[in-house]
Structures are given as structure tokens and as C-alpha cells.
Amino acid sequence: MFDVLIIGGGAAGFYAAIHIAEAKPKLKIAILERGKEVLSKVKVSGGGRCNVTHAEFDPAELVKNYPRGEKELLGPFHTYCTGDTVAFFEERGVPLKIEEDGRMFPTSNSSGTIIDLFLKQAEQLGIKILKHSSVIDFEPIVSEKKAKVIEGWKVTSIKSDYTSKKLLIASGSSSKIWKILERLGHTIEPAVPSLFTFNIGDERIAGIQGLSTHAKVQILAKKIFNPKITIKLRSEVAAESLLESEGPILVTHWGLSGPAILKLSAWGAKLLGDFKYKFTIRVNWVPQFHEGAVLPYLMEIKDVEAKKTVLRTKALDIPRRLWTNLVRASDIDSDLKWADVTKVQLQNLSEQLTQGEFRVDGKSTFKEEFVTAGGVDLKEINFKTMQSKVLPGLYFAGEVINVDAITGGFNFQNAWTTGFIAAKGIVQENSFKFLLFLVSSS
Image 1 (cartoon, rainbow, N blue to C red):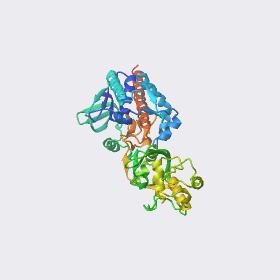
Image 2: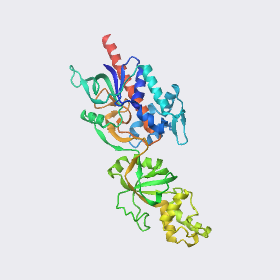
Image 3: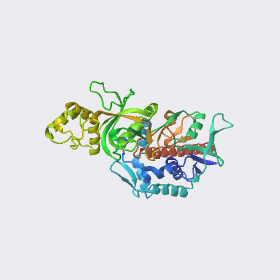
Image 4: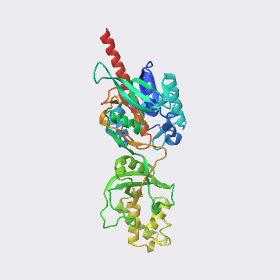
């Protein structure tokens, strides 16, 4: 029998195992991994550099990056936050660095550094790693003497049966594990993608792949979309904005990506899933301007640059290729001079710049960031210990629970924090029971 079995050989599972073993070296601990390799998500994270965490050290600010779990993670982050993560790695010879956008990577710029550390620690601490051990089922071992008292856990893998006093689930968004948990009495929030880019086929962003700029993007309430109307009519009441985000936006071969888009995909994961990923966005390419201020500004440019063509005179601080496409979309000919442009055309251009609407028709996975919203209902977890409120002796860590974050290292910080809290909960419970035994036997 093991003292602790961990289902899932990922970031959360290894982090918890190491902390348990360091606190209680005599405990028998094993990690069950379904694949031939462990820490596969760590390997591909950050383009192979591993975005370990984010340089946000205030728990109250850190939780704002979690569309699901913001309230529940506040307490755990006060217990174990970004600074603790940095200290963990640096104390073990893996220093981290902060990049301009706040993301933190190992100074080696290699995820292999993190993987090697975990594997080395596991070996030194006597943690068994059982690969090719996909879990088929697990169930509580109920006391024969005391009804409904759980004495341990039986875990069945494709290789063997195991028993353990405590069971930690760190299997990520595994539908198979979720189904077992649901059968045992837990509520599971259905899975939906959380980080994805928007598929958009539109002439205004065609042929300018790779272009990046700062913009404000809004997701609009559902309405009938007419592809022939690419800007809002002045007499039309503006469609309601359900969500909005401002930041870098990237034009890709398939549509739009970048931090501003990914934030919307995370915060709108459930909503956009309900929309079946068919919806409309409104883009302000010059968010530094108030919407009503752009037209008067263009009227001034009309007087100052009268002899120049509109197409070649980039009047605002946006990429030239984008300016060219928006000018053409405003029914302004390539050789039209500012002196000859009409007020209606300038109105069109102003609205293309600040209120252009784009039809989103589907999604694409963002690089290797396979992040999913969904999992064990947060109300069924004690976040002081990460223990199940439904099944004593069962613990959770990482993305198996209904917590997810925007891109930037925040999902890993959830893994480190919940892994640590679960380890602490498991160790404290074992110590408490041992103390009771000593008292009762004296």
C-alpha cells in the first residue's frame, strides 16, 4: 500500500509529490502517468521555454487573471504565491527571469531545466513514477467496522491495482477522470476551450498576416449580421458590448490573435461556447482616441495635407498596411487626395478606425496552450487543504478543478499553489492522525 497516490504526471502532480516527500520522507508516494512521458505540457509551454509564472506578487491582483477561480484562489495565494514559486526554483538551482510583459522563464530559456529538476527531485526523494499507467477506475475503501468511513483508496490502472491512504487527482482536463469523479458524487462543470484565437475571413485584415498593433476589442450581443455592412450606420443604436479587452492584437492567417483576443477567449469561454464560436466583435484600432474625436481630427488632416493622397498619408499611429486596408474599406480610391475626400468618406474612415465590426466564424487553438474551462465544482473543494468536501482523503490540484487563467504563466501558478496546498493538507492530516494514535496508546 502507498501512503499517497497521485493521478497525473504533470506540473501540479510533481509539485505536490515533492512537497509531500520533503515534509514526510518516510511516506510511500507514487505518480501514475498515462503516457510514456511525464510533464509533457511543461515541455511545450512558452514555445519550449516554460512560462513558469507571472511577475505579479500581490494575491489581490494575481487573482484578477482567473476567469474561473478568482474568489476561491485568493486564500491559497495568500498562503503560497508567486514569490514562493520563485524561491522554490531558485533554492534548487533554477533561477528565473522576468520579461517585459511580466512572464517569467528559467534563465536557461529551456523547459528541459524545469523537467530535469522535477525528475531529479523525484528520484532523490524516492517518489515512484509509474508510466504507461492510464487509470481505469478508482474507488474509496470503506471501513468494515464503521459505515461510510473511508480508510483509503483503490486505484485500477491498465497495468495493476494499487491501494493508497490518500489520493490526489492532478490529471488536468481528463474527461475519463471527470466521469469517475461524477459517478462518485462530485459535480463536474462541462469542459469548454479557454484560450483560443478568432477565425475571421475579412478583406480588411487580409494579406497583412503577422501585423501587430494595440487595439480595443469588444464582443457584441447576438444580432443578425449582414456581411455587406462592415461599419455601424450613424443612425443605428450601437450594439451592446458583452465583454471588452484592450491590448496587443495580432493579425494571423486565420484571423485575430494576441493578448487582447486571448483575454476575451478566457473570460468569455462559456459565453462563446454557447454562441458556438459564431459572433461579432467591434474593434477600435486607435483606442487612445475618444470615438467622437477621430472625425474632427481627420477633418483637420484634410486641410493640412490637402494635396496628398489619403492612402499614402497615414494620419494615425497604426501600421501602414492596416491603414491602407481601412482606407480602401471606406470607399476611398487609392489616388484620392485629402482635399477631394467627402465628409461621408471621412465618417466611414472614422468608423472603420474606431467601430469596425468583424464576424467571427470559429476558433483555433492558441499554440500549445491547451487550456480548458471546466472541471470539479469549486464549491465541493476545501481550498484550505484542497481536499474534497464530498469524499474524505481525496485531494485535487491543477486544472482538474474548474479554474483557468489567461495566458502568461498564470495557469502554472495555479498548479504550483494548489499542488502545494494539497501537499500541506495531506501532510497535516497524516500528522494529526499520528498524534491521535500516540495519545490514545499512552
